[in-house]
Length: 515
Image 1 (tube, rainbow, N blue to C red):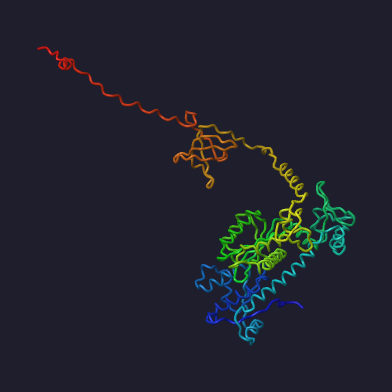
Image 2 (cartoon, rainbow, N blue to C red):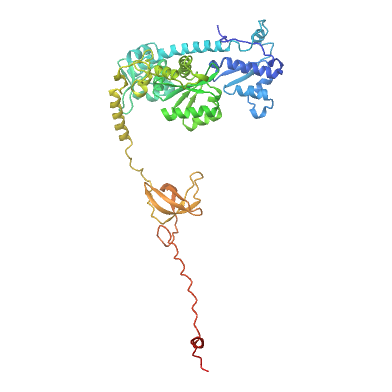
């Protein structure tokens, strides 16, 4: 049976305040409420379609910008839909039979969102169970037997194997079967080994060609090696928390927000986690408002972190996020302190016990996978569990050797111009690091080594440390080569005035004046 099928259906009555909304406000409220109810299914959906029988919503929820919406209520409703990607289509009310019928179906009046929390728990549990089941199936180790089994059921693989075995290729690519044209350019690099197709390039390691059925499982295994985390917001007893879990090891961090979950507060906590564990390559989240705000998005961009919002592209990430929230709720539900605080012994011991607990199907706890040993908690443990495992030392030594080899200096590229060192006392142009213009000049005062020089800038007289790359020697140099121009010698003191006494005055004083 084709066509559309109902996956989720719901409705509610209006509150006393909402009953006074204008028609367009009420219709926009309905769309916003529906998106919120089904957000676990709608977030990240690339081809989401919203059908409404109120034509003004097509333009309002479509490409109209927030600055063009003057109605404050419509502005806030439109703002709540920005985290979704959707198209709006108009359907006349006479053809919108199902929604029109359900909206008029008589039912007992109840408060809006009376069962929202319970419905959210049920939806979350269902999604987590489904994704966890898919994850368990996709985490099986791939071996040759598994590849052979999948290859025997794939007609395209069998047809390609027959071509490779006898090397029966057409002279031109257009003459080949359509499903085999993608392999035509690599036909000389394909061979058969024990009924499996092998790809070899320039004497490299042979690689198995797998069927399309196994592509997703291999991609999952490749992503497992990336530094990825899951972040999600949760509410418990009126308090807001954030769960931050490592995708690979399962290490869990929980933060409490007693004064609200603003973007700046979330960024402050994330920056602390990045400093402690390093910035991840990928963060998976369910698309909370403050986790995808402009300020938070800019923070992730500066740290080089990719944000994954869509469960359609990577469903395991969303499952891990929801599982982390479930775990965090279970841990802190009965262990929080006064005012929902996590700064208490019960919450700390509960988190420590989780980090020391072996997950199902694993022989290492999150603490052992992260730091190589168990953590001291409230449960007595043999002392040898607190020691770092021996193979960790070997891995660290091998890693240091590999890093030392990779960090050896490479010879300069061919044709690179040699930059001569600067001498103390020469005048240079200084490049502005922002505008890239050579708009300042100065005098080389001191050479600090490693291509660094102290420059006394003209005008301000400030001494700045600059790299040789940002310095250019002036063609006209002053005649002196001293580092600092000599200070002018102070002017000699003004000679004292000497008076000569007339000869007759001396005679007068001495009493020898002739009469």
